[in-house]
Length: 225
Image (tube, rainbow, N blue to C red; front, side, top):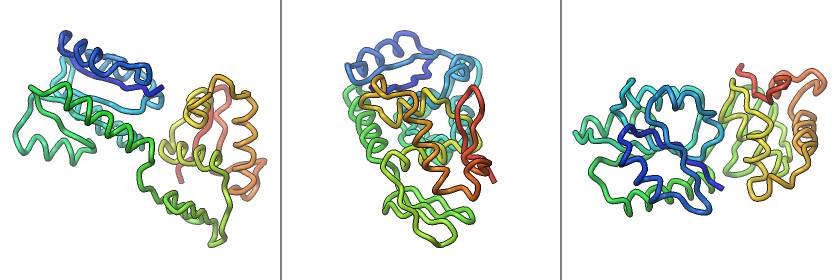
């Protein structure tokens, strides 16, 4: 199940978009204000659709904050601001697509599906910070120049934490994203085992991790260095 957060203050339009996009495979959460959006756990979503002109501020501010938190989830701007400069600012602020009102629901649906397919395949991603070099496209993971073999599950866990480095990602969100096709059947211990294996491969002292830290009672984080 893919989850989309729609931030749109027009009640009729918001409901229409929800009806057009909702399916057995897609769940839409609708927020009418930035305040409502800030109350959501951003790590639970696979796509954001943002209006710019909202009652309590600009959707661009929310977009920039998402990117500052290293959230790499696709973001579509849906707005009446149709000047060329508006589009440029939106894309340069971190949006993946920019759709102006009025628009076709069929085109919106197609663009949403395109972004979800893109997210599912994975964005090109290289992380480099001494002593690590991780190339997820080529599944090349190195520490101090030495190659490290990571399982698919370990790669998924590492990628999610790197995408959200400096932020705590809950165990529930990690389980749902790593084992998306059957998270409800995954033993709670599976995540702990995967984390232990990843620490054994990446940390100098796995018992006192420097990077893959546990935030007790909440989840895990890749500590920013």
